[in-house]
Image (cartoon, rainbow over all chains, first blue to last red; front, side, top):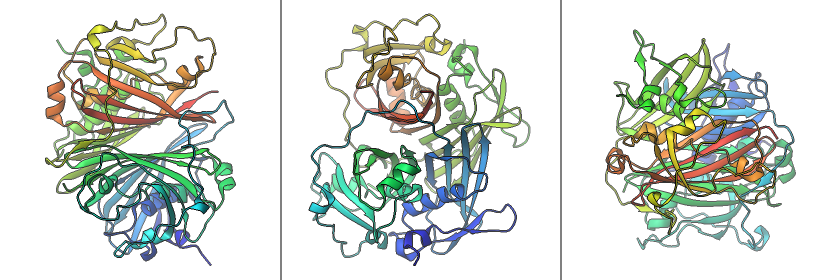
Length: 271
Length: 271
């Protein structure tokens, strides 16, 4: 049986060079439109399945230009420059003839080189097995149930009481639900799974929407395969909130302490 | 007299909807091709001068697809989606008919809202006036002389002796040289002015090249105008170095302690 994530990012080739057709998935529905992480993964997928693809993703930037409506859409991925070891992509998702999201991606053939972590996985974090999975709240969008999330700290506030907090760090173990071996597409989606930092800071709900999301892939396919279905550790925090926009940054770690991805986004909020 | 930065990012309209023509500037030459910060600023400039522009930049991602040769190039900026308060752009720079760089940008009309810094400017940093400007090294590329840089810590190593360091933080005051009032274009360039973190970590030189650069603008035009020509504080650090690529993140602060921009890049290195 196909995993709901694979069903959600599935692409059907269109005739000629017209790209692919996909459709939103109710299993990953958000408050309005689909979960942005799945949209990001679908855009990346269009390059991953392209016959001209070189190597593996190094970087992905997705710009969410409009809320997607439920239903079908078209995705076209175009390699705009292929060098000896790097390849640059532009990817566009449209619905009803209008651009709804754009992405750029850098792919590369990696070689083994001197390597060194500078950022470190947080020390002394309890294991995923020792933590209880977060329960989905009444009214939570469907996509939240597609992840097993176990918070070390910075869970969704118990009450939205408007008591402002000085910091918005979350640390959590998470994996696809049901379990699914980690790959570039699912990692891209996980990088958008950290709920908006402003909910932690303000302890009040407000309309928000990610306008742009950038993910850097530090893992190659072998490192992702080694991670398998086990939970990864996500660490997210807000940076600055000002006049309608805030940015948040996060890292995703393997359970062996290797950085799999670093990710950043700029989010609109109604204040 | 025109400031060399304005000369470097100057664009001449091409007939019809064919975009603009620009040219590399010897004043901002890098080891190979022009300083990437000026390329980023030029791509942003193509949207800034576009008659359909809405509001001010919120985010800019530049993908450096190939080294630019000295000489002329074409830039075309296309608003792919204009909403009530946000606008999404795709921008492409080509040389000799081939794509050399692409960019996406989000522009927005900002409103006054609840605002709050989460990241804080480093406390107890000596003032720019109390520090000596870094002297350009023999063999340093021309663009380095277009900035007055005063390092608090993490300056370019005195010797490239291969003694590996555990961290790569740099903190420095910097401004255009000669002084120039800060605006979105010059801030975009400043965000690419932090020398590659790997030089600090390894204390050895190696071929490197930024493949993608993302900048989030927290400042609006009024905040930039208030900063004027005075130096800003840049704080940069490496995140992870692995198999040919590393990422670095930085913040740029006003001298009054407000975050003007946060910026991230993924860099190729030969190891």
